[in-house]
Image 1 (cartoon, helix red, strand yellow):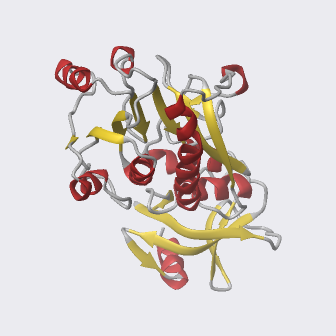
Image 2 (cartoon, one colour):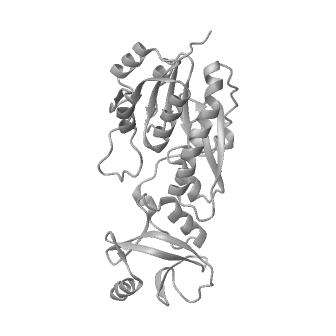
Image 3 (cartoon, rainbow, N blue to C red):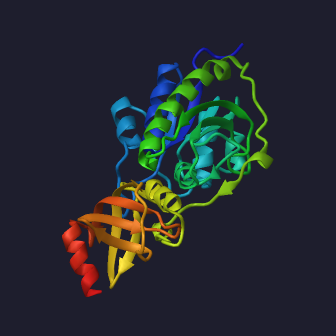
Length: 305
């Protein structure tokens, strides 16, 4: 007979970590330990704090630099948890540690697996112009995002959605997915589905430099790049005469563009980014040297270049 109050060790960070910890508590899971990350001072922290939630809820929370440390494994072995969960924790967990969970180790991933396995799946999905993504709860394995699928919840990606906006939807989808899956996991009758890796691809992390705009691409491709890395992410950018221009807000520009070379232009007091297919994006807010600049200021800088 399964215990009435299952115990879990949770690896968590970010908004998804916060919402999923709350979901575990609401479903009656006893969380014996949370493992999280120290905030990086070089990163824009726009999301909720797992550590703060744990402090409010009286849950032990630690932030070891290495989840593979023998000390952490020994502590988890002493807890002998029924479950291990990972909710937007940024490191892979070793299989030896996963084996310490008596009733399974599960990860919440921000895509509809097997698509977009790996890092920053929301940003990659927006960059590639997907119209749908979702949250997937799956068993953890030696390879990232490769274990059997327990539950999934899809969300739409609208044509003008930024990755930040999609991430908000995924946070809700993650909570729904976990809420629906937990009764089966607790009762031991959850049905697992095959995670067919041949039907998806693995993607690595992204760096701020990956936001550099290639104006020879189509307007849709450039717009997708903007949407994928728009603030609070570092942003899509271009450079003119030692000045870096970062696009904060933009939309596709419908009118036809004639006789303008690729790159930034000011036309009738409107800032346009002309692309390789002869179409453009309309730039609603543009930053230079971390300050918003007007169309007139941009025109002056272009004239001096």
